[in-house]
Image (cartoon, rainbow, N blue to C red; front, side, top):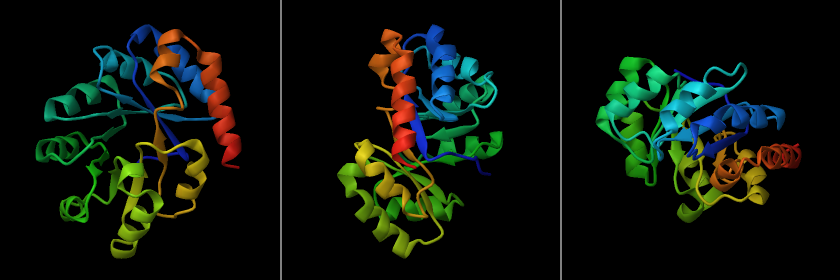
Amino acid sequence: MSVGMGPLLPIAVVDNAGHAEALGAALLEGGITQVEVTLRTGAAIEVIRRLARIPGLTVGAGTVLSASDVARVTDAGAEFLISPGWDDGVHRSALEHGLPWFPGVATATELMTARAAGVHTVKIFPAAHLGGVGFIDALTAVFPETTFLPSGGIPLEEVADYLLRPSVLAVGGSWIASRSLIAAGSFEKIVDTCKHAMRTLQ
């Protein structure tokens, strides 16, 4: 199972489902075609449902912590799942629903657990605190078939360095479409942030 991704993965915390359509339009206008909606708010499931209806936008669910979460986000139209760590129940449910799942790892032991279960793309979280690109280089040397989705404390000026690594699928960040900008309805600012980020990576 795989999902196509561009270089940047916005991690969105959305408090009001009424902002979903404007958020999706802003991301696409800014040149970004995927988003991770975290299950940190009561609106998250409805936000996923609304974003999933937007042509050209790939929508995933983040902070997936249980098998019941998998069922709910699958029903809402999520196309991939991301968790901060490993959970056997989430893994089984992801397989049952046929969705790519990217569990978070912070150690080689956790990565070995994922690989033993057949998962070869993982989230590195919190990437900056774990050692950044140096940590990814060290893991890649030992596990060359693994690809990574680093997130957590990565500023824009460091994103290109991560993406130079062939093992990095995409870089996640909440700054691309911040919770405060979404809540304030500042979608033109989100468009500008996306366009600036994409230009920086060219």
